[in-house]
Image 1 (tube, rainbow, N blue to C red):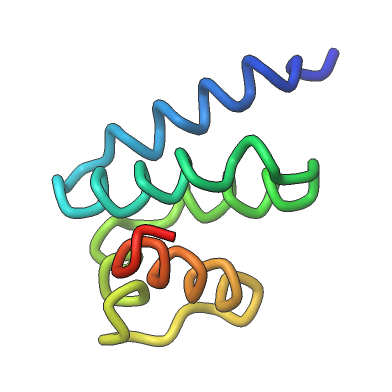
Image 2 (image 1 turned 120 degrees about the horizontal axis):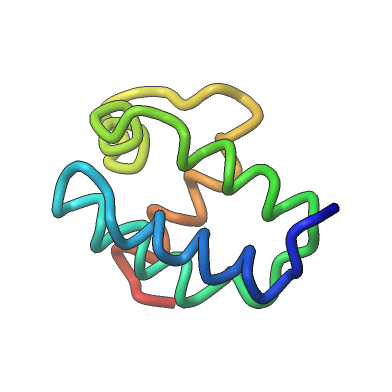
Length: 87
């Protein structure tokens, strides 16, 4: 049985806001608040997979200190833009 969309959105929002390091709570929480409700199932799958990555790696990718895997690169770029611009 698949997870209802509203439960999935709440679960992903919780995971985005409760990370291992505070910086990623802020960055991913802001992104989740701005974009999750508009995402289709494929984008939610990708975000769910991204949330399984190590926080230190995520921080490096978002801040441009490291290169994300190709499948995450567009989403990481959007996360970085929202984290910096709030848009």
